[in-house]
Image 1: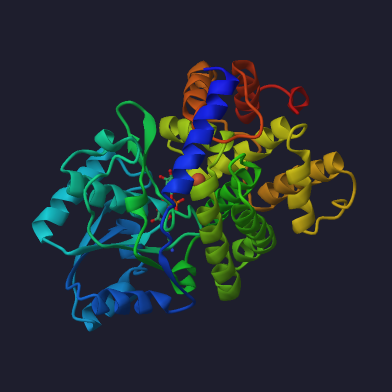
Image 2: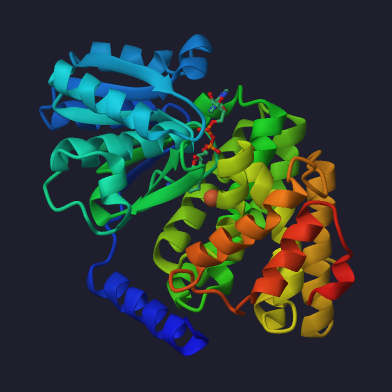
Amino acid sequence: MNNIIRRLRIRGLGIATKLAPAPTPFIFTGPGSSAELVGMIADRGLRSVLVVTDAVLLELKVVDPVLAALKAAGITAHVYSDVEPDPTIAVVMKGVARLKEAGADAVLAVGGGSPIDAAKAIIACRAQGCSPEALDGYFKVRKAVLPFFSIPTTAGTGSEVTIVSVISDPEAQRKFAIVDNKLVPVAIALDPNLMLGLPPGVTAATGMDALTHAVESYLSTLATPATRAMSLGATRVIVRDLPKVYEDGRDIAARQSLAVASCQAGLAFTKAGVGYVHAISHQIGAIYHLPHGLVNAVVLPYVLDFYLDQAATPLAELARACGLEGAEKDDRTSARTFVAELRRLNALLGIPETLDKVDVKDIPELVRRALVEAHGAYPVPKYMSNSDCLDVINLVAGRGSAQSLG
Ligand SMILES: NC(=O)c1ccc[n+]([C@@H]2O[C@H](COP(=O)([O-])OP(=O)(O)OC[C@H]3O[C@@H](n4cnc5c(N)ncnc54)[C@H](O)[C@@H]3O)[C@@H](O)[C@H]2O)c1
Ligand SMILES: [Fe+2]
């Protein structure tokens, strides 16, 4: 596919997004807001809910306040907690069976991106009567889904507001996305009380995922003034507050502002899209089972180095929004300051510069798959050739020098 065809296809996706705008859920925020969300579920007359979560969250009792609120509201909770990081087709199908057996009239996801994505795929597959692979791609959910609600416990994927569900196919060692407006919840709660126990490593990785959404959507050729404002605001808050919560996980004010920033980044990228960082990271994550946010964090500075010449102005704007020292200089210098700040942030958060797990023999296939995912779907500011992508992934794998980029 040449660049003109790719641009036309992306323009088409942009028009489709404008003609069928993604709904935005009703958003409750603040400590204790998950109980307010449960109040809304009760007010709608829903009496039986499938709670989709994971075993760690159950064990840590993170879900307990939500279960208590459901009980107090007279709602029966059926818990499905078999979701594991990077939910698989099998996890989704088991959830569909659990939903049928429970006969629940609504679904509530409580967890990070994995339980939320699993829940989205469960409602979609239940409605369509199919397995998740049949819904791989855009707008294939034709039937009405059950009322869906979500409480994110990481900040995060932004999945609580996006039209995307990312599902893993372990046999094919790939991740695929179900993209549909029907996957957006009716309402969500951004409740920092549920995030206080998130360990520093997961806090760092998930926060860098949110930052990647903010930056990639800001650089998107489909960005609008509204998405740019959300991406810029989210970038500023994450760069400022992520080190705070990494240091002190119980800083509730910073947890709250990160939850809102991550949600804003989700709102921005669900309209403006992501770019090569996600395209590369999905392939690495699918093969080596590394946390999504961690891989994004490592890949992000290398991809931005590659974009530097074409995207110096928006990168400089991000540097200025963050109030970085040196950001008042010319765009190219300020853009470099922004990328250097991301490298400094990664180091501060204990994120490595490279991923040792990436095996040199897999790199050609990683390149091929990343370009298949990105081209024709992601509104990137500058196209990668095969050899550009090879350079980036070699650097991510700790081979080669960054001088070849940018
Ligand atoms: N749908 C989208 O728009 C979208 C966007 C980006 C990523 N994703 C997907 O989301 C998934 C990753 O989600 P994630 O990064 O939120 O992680 P996750 O949901 O996989 O959770 C990671 C770990 O953190 C634990 N955890 C979560 N919240 C916790 C809390 N409050 N306290 C203690 N432990 C907690 C979980 O039990 C799990 O062990 C990937 O599959 C990725 O592909 C989806
Ligand atoms: Fe992501």
